[in-house]
Length: 282
Image (cartoon, rainbow, N blue to C red):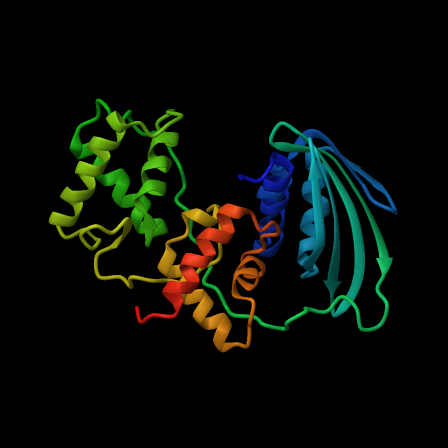
């Protein structure tokens, strides 16, 4: 089951906090959104941008204890730590469409011994470099001389990247909504031509594209990807590193590392596959 809209919003919210991305964090809110805190009300995206800029500059870390969603509402409990001082945050997000219309939070002191990381397990992740979308021609009628350079841009920015994600990024930038078989054919053909030209690498039967001569696996932040858009071997290598650092419940440790909250059935299946791969040699 896919996450609900408020769950997806919240998971991205956590990733953007970890990435210290003020602009993207503010853009999660509607222009007329209200953030109601215990000490003040902050209304409108410009005021929110200023608030988040100041808050993120303090270097906060956030650990979610629980999150529950129904309809367009999500409630959560988390521990927010700034300068080694944890406080308990209780919050409610009200979604309107795919953005936040209202966000209510309350902060309370944490009792001694609470609010620290449960496992203390941490591994460093490379920052994720996302492709910057721009207008591109419809792949169904664009020539190979146009499609190839754009695909190379995407792979160079985000590789190793699942071919499916690369194609969907292209389709979305072209104004399309779905990756149809008609659109896939010229994109796939351009991918093979790029490999034959020595610009990108991928093994026969592999769904993962990367710039020529670059590592097959890079362990990175989740970035704008959904969990199932992360190459399986990348997750497997993350699991190896988490295991070496002392983690025992690897699927949950991966979610924590990525700033995700909800263990869906789909995520559970995907992470079980990755755990099997992590037990074999790359």
